[in-house]
Length: 233
Image 1 (tube, rainbow, N blue to C red):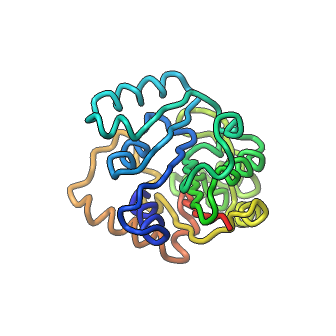
Image 2 (image 1 turned 120 degrees about the vertical axis):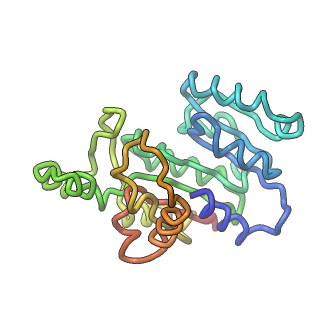
C-alpha cells in the first residue's frame, strides 16, 4: 500500500515538493514517520493514548530534522475542524479507521475540507463486497452465507466493526468534492494468513503477486481491503 500511495503522490506533485500531510488515526505512526523521513511535513492525529505514546517514543529516536517535520496530536478524527483550518493539507490519510466509525460520512466530509485544491485523500477500508471470502476459504460455510448481505463483521481483535462498499464510497467521495481517482485491492491472497506467520522464503514473489492482483480486475474486487484515492476539486 505504501507503494500505491507513493505512486499517487508522485503522479500529482513535483518531485521533491515538501507536502503537508495529515494522518488521521495514525496508530503507532508507522506511515507518518515514513513520510516524514521522505521530507514531508506530517501531522499525526490519534485518539488512543497508548498509540500516541508509542508514536512519540518512535519519533524521539529519529534525527532532529525528522522530529522537526512531524507533530503528534491526541484527538479524534471527527474533530479535524477543531484543530485545523480548511485547506491546510495537501495529503490526508485515513487508513484502517472507517471500520470503527458507525456513520463515516461526516468524518469523510471533514477530511475533504482539510484538503487544499488538488489535494489527495487516501482511504484504507475493509472491503464490504468481499466479506464472505475469508470465511469461505476457511470452510466456514455458515459464516460465508451470513456475510453476503451485511457490512458488519468481527475483526481479528474480536471487535464488532463494519466494512465499506466500493460503490457507496465512490458516491460519497463525489458528494464531498473529492471524487475517486484510483483504487486498489490490498491483501488479495494473504488475508487468511495468521498475523504471526513467518514470512515465506519467496516473499518478493508474494509481494509481486499482491501488487499485480491489487491493480487487476477481477482480483482486486475480492481483496480484503480497498485503498481508495480521491482528489479535491
